[in-house]
Each structure stands twice: as C-alpha cells, then as structure tokens.
Image 1 (cartoon, helix red, strand yellow):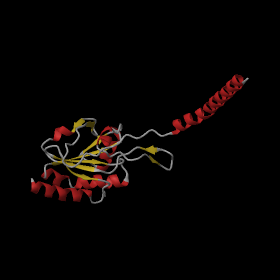
Image 2: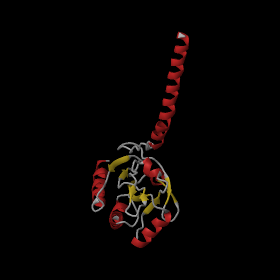
Image 3: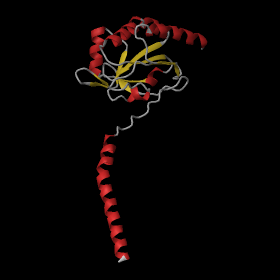
Length: 202
C-alpha cells in the first residue's frame, strides 16, 4: 500500500512538472523571439592608426580607392543625405574652398549611403566637382564607425544614414584628425586651419 502511495505521488509530481514545462515553454519562446538582435559594434579608427582602405564608385560610376591618393592629404567626410540642407551647405563650402585644398595637396572625398545616380544628380544640380562616393550597403560607413541609428520620418520611411563625421588622412595614409558631428557651416574653414597647422609640424 505504501509503495502504491509513493508511486502515485511520484506520478503526480511528474505530471505537474511536465504541465509546468508545457505552459512556460511558449512564453519563453515568445520572449526569445521578441528580443532584438544585437547591433554590430562600430569601431571608429583612432588618430595615428592606418586609415582603412576601401573602394567605392563615384558620381560617374568610376571605382575610387583610398590608396589611389597615397602621398596626398585626404578629407574623407561622411554625410547623411544628398540634397538636404546641411549636406548642401557643407558641400558648397568644400566646393568654394577647393582651390585652397588643391594648394595644400589635399583632396575631398564625400561618402553617403546614397546611390551613384543620386550623387550624380546632386553634383549636377549644385555644380560639385569633387568626388562623392556611393555606399548604399554601408560597408565603408560602418568601417569608419559612422553609421547613425535608423531614423523614421513622418511618412513612415526609415533612413539608414551616415553621421556627419570627417577623417583627415595624412599623405602616409594615417588618420591625422577625427571630427565627429561636425557643424557644416564652418567645417571647411576649421579643416583648412588644421591642415595648415599639421603641415607646419611635419
């Protein structure tokens, strides 16, 4: 009789345990499904480190590589979107100051997540003659730690854009200075001043 009672208790406990597992499992599964995937960490290249090389198409669809400019200063600037107000101001200032960059043996390379066609339209509309590079896959933007969090616009569209960061790369291919969240109104002026200072110390 005692053995039967013990067996009954064991079976009852086992049944309750299985019932609890069955009840909890869907909840755990749902919580697991709702957990957001971790975003990959972005590491911004530090001053003094080699600038990560890359190849991207410009506004004409021609492939451009960073190593093509070894021996020159490179202003590698990331910007959010073609033909928006701040980006247009920043591009116009670079265009206006282009002769000063030429005199300092420096080139301007702009990078955004826009397409080649978008860059071509932007350059034609605003008479931009320096190179804008298309990175719709965000490969180089991420490599330079400059991908912004997604932005949801009023119409519901989501923009995956670059932050307004700039990397000044010296003629040996190393990062000389990093500018984050720059002010497009005076960024070119600041860059030219820093270029003059850096040139005088070399």
